[in-house]
Image 1 (tube, rainbow, N blue to C red):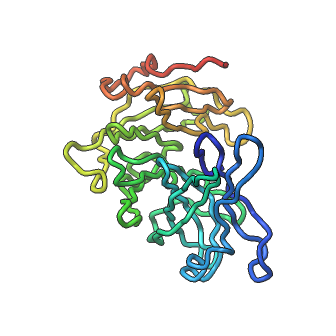
Image 2: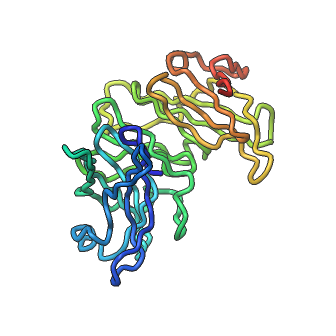
Image 3: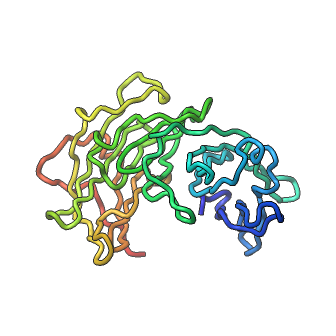
Length: 283
């Protein structure tokens, strides 16, 4: 699943291609009546095929209004490409997607490696700034990169060393603040620490850099630890626009909310005050 558009899921799928390309990537919109509309097929995109001379593996996606951003891997040399397109709805209720803008990323911008057939583990789109001048992405091991929309060329604004190699990252689109969820697994009780790094004032989003010296511990939530596998306690974090909260998924698939209206002004703590992290009701 790359994302949602008009409340309908957009999927990256493998489809039967031409004799030249065999299996090919496609992006499909699954509409509410159960039918599907193919928005884009790689073997039919002559411009992209000519530009890269090979197949792209699309694994991550993100929507900001009608704009679609897709992170892909060029299998020929395992380099990374960020693509941007506009998803359009036509008068006959059909949809189309034209990925007409892209940029190959420099080495070291995307931290996590990609295996054929697998997604980018730990790589997540975090969102855009309020003015929609840049896309923020967790690129693995707690590192965060900024991709200005005028170039799509990413750069690290928070390194994995400065983030403490945290497992999950939350982004506040109203303040451009970063929230780091440090997964301590079963090493201590409680098993997670949440740190806040405020964005420097009067700095444009495309020029932001996050300073480790301003990292502040704001809570130690008592997340459930995964019983099997890697025994992780944080499986993912996402921003919910309707509630202005960061939603965290713990190791046993419990949902927790971090209300940002409190977290933005909360004083740093060393005592593990978790009053601002609320367990969501099961329903």
